[in-house]
View 1 (cartoon, rainbow over the protein chains, first blue to last red):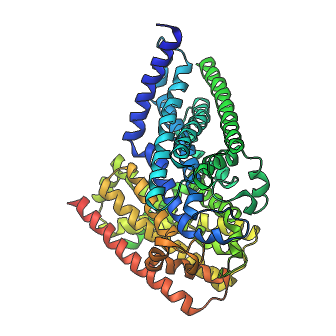
View 2 (view 1 turned 90 degrees about the vertical axis):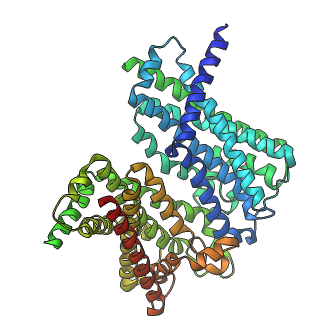
View 3 (view 1 turned 135 degrees about the vertical axis):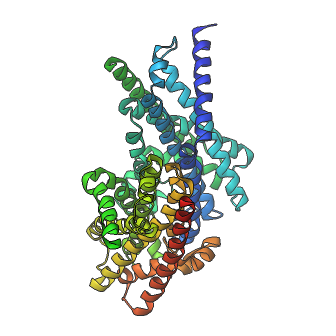
Length: 261
Length: 252
């Protein structure tokens, strides 16, 4: 077996374990599915009249616009869950045992990212299903829906790398969970829940340079308009920049942790 | 005797905040972020015909006050679940004071603890342009929000005694989230759409929210106040009965 195949096998084994952990414990899956669903329900019913505002994009309904917000929120919260789960492994000593096993250190992070890929796709399926049940229309059709699932999975993995970096750096569940409110800061300062042009300053200015805006717009476009190359490329660039930052920070945090121990 | 025991239990609840100030941060941080963030996101909703004020922060700050107070109440339930898990609550059950005193001490401490997020949210809200509600409006807002914290603490205590685990915290927080946000939280009742318009109409927390909100978006009147007080009393009674029932089950 080649080194790559061995590492992939280990990563997948760790990923399966993390996925079971995420789906068996409410503290991990509730933030990914329950909170964004409640938020979606409240935003849609509470601010649904916003579609009448001048400058609001042409949409079938506010739910169509909000679906992308719910999906990116779920992907970010899946990163918090991934980080929490990894920090729990560090606190309970499981990580130490992995470090002494004959496996590449990077498989610990890759395992988490594979898990987040699955969780992101699951979140995408969940919100598209909810959206279709409650009357959303996916303008991009089946291809658009599949594209949304792929983008949701990649986004969750990208943010998962940030969650892993934080867990490896802090090594404490409480610290990772402490970033929960910051997730909303990033979301509020982007076009995740409302068109950037209609945000209040200074959120409007920040949203225009926030990668989250490009990711949210990329996931939203297949729902409200269809598939467009430039929006998709901007979305993928946004995801790549987040993933690159997360992997760099993860590698640094892992080195720091090994040096300290 | 009963009052002294209640006071001691209240002091214990307050000490958790005074001696570990960091424990108050999550309860303050989240509603503040939501208040400022949602104002930035939905601020232009005030341009819609039928919106009752031109200041979205004034419209939203009552929601954040109830949210901050409600989550403080829910946190009291999580603390009670921790006491149950660690066996501390079993020792309290063996103590001479009646059961309702144990509940009263826990619940009333939530009311006092809620003053921390309430005051901080008011400071931030006024700093970013919320209208001054007048002293009467402010007093009604603080009274209703801190009482709402006690109501949520009763509910959360009942859940803590029912499930006896901190993992039930998600039920406490989710219920608080639903209770506060399934109301005309983001827009006036007339502008709500779909099922939320119906739910908000019958949700008793809507009356509490409108009582808290009245001074921030207009005049304070008795007609705008009493439905909120009635809703608080009704919800409070229901939640006290629920918590006492769970306490009775625990004793059995």
